[in-house]
Image (cartoon, rainbow over all chains, first blue to last red; front, side, top):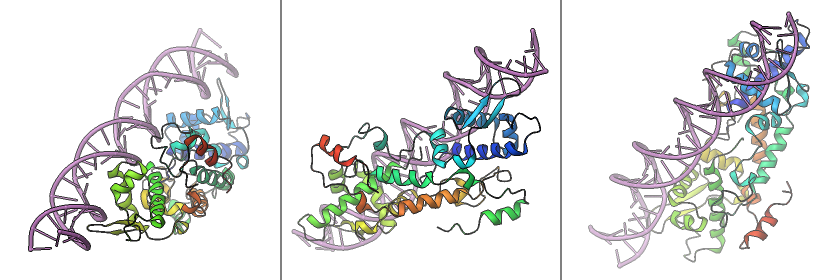
Length: 161
Length: 161
DNA sequence: ACAAACCGGACCCTGTGGGTCCGGATATCC
DNA sequence: GGATATCCGGACCCACAGGGTCCGGTTTGT
């Protein structure tokens, strides 16, 4: 179904949470660094998973890490400067729809007969371009401290397929 | 990696193969109907898999099936009228990046805290729109009865979207 | 020195894509 | 009308990877 991994979903949630804590501040003064247990508690995502996601994001340079006591993570850039492709690439690796795309001819056993060799890149680039235009600032929905039933009405209505 | 299923890849190959046989014709006169074993032999895809893909495509109305002796499959519409989303939807089901998108709130256990509820639809629609603009006619590369090394040079360069 | 937090890796386990097979239905040909 | 070729529908099994967990090591502040 062209489904993306759940880790990516978590990553977006975590990043947005990181942005929320940045301005409000935890009151500590350290420009809003947040610990993975703290983010886990705030988002409902299991803590080890949060740590794993954060690690991947730090590795990709989307968040900066502060080690030691009172350490934690903070955003490396504002949400508006982070596109969805960045997150996907950080968590799931580079976007490659088919095995043919990334590794040249490696692994494609029917390469000699394949009629669409290299043409998936067309699709690949189209998706990449579309995703590049969407930033996390776009995805940060309504602040939503709203009663759950009401929220569902706001988020659900007729997924215009 | 936002990877799509291999079945979808096969479906595109099969559909293009179907289009190839349509004009040249197998000489039989039946407007180019092709059997699944025949397509399997021509594409290099294992025959049961071809049959499975064809079945899904027929179910989605992308190809028409002719039962009985000398039966087979033929395209229901020209390649230019089949977009990539059609193929993906036929093989992999409707495009839904996350579990949140298709089933409303079903299954999302942290829904009460999720900060991006419903916002993946934005990404979803962007991808769907991008893929809708690409037809199989766009993906049918050069006829390519060419030596592999040369082919790779032709197929690779800057996919002019 | 102790504690808090990140860091890096290893580990297992379930879900599902992906491939195979079989019996039944159906249309053509002899 | 029977034989044959083909599609049709389902059940079945296997392997791979997502994804969740845990542990020891390292860095930094108190």
